[in-house]
Amino acid sequence: MSRSLSLLAAFFSLVGCTVGAVLLLFLLAPLDILKDAHLLSAFTAEQSQALPLTFLKLHALGYTVRMLLFGSYNILIGYLIVRSIFLPRILGALLAISGVCYQIDNFAAFLSRESSRCSAPKRNWDSTPQALTLIELFGLEFSVCKLDSVGNDG
Image 1: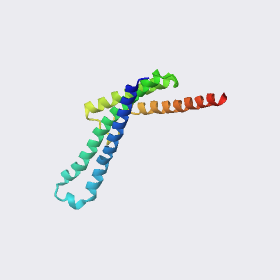
Image 2: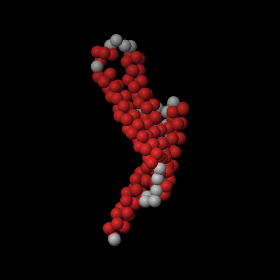
Image 3: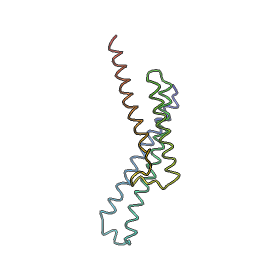
Image 4: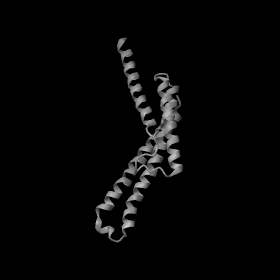
């Protein structure tokens, strides 16, 4: 196994979690801004509506960056699972494929910038990586149970 790839995957995971925590502030900011109506009296109606929308758009952009990090993490962990001897290689392959799907989806969203995560998704294949991740989780649970049963037989 590669220690440097494992550390890189852990780094992507840590940075992705940190970005996600910061992104929560971008979701709370519009609520806080709209809560204090007397502060918004200094702005026109369009300006007072544009400010919370700006925070929501920043959250959408940051979410895309977070999912790029998550896709990179999936690719690295998938590769490590394929190279491992104690997990089924198909799980690693599926995880790597889901990472590639995340990368393609989010690079397209990042480059087009028309894809707003605040509204309904415009792509029909947006849930493909999530479905693959669920399949992997069920497979991982099955393989762990299988390893436990093998260890209990002897």
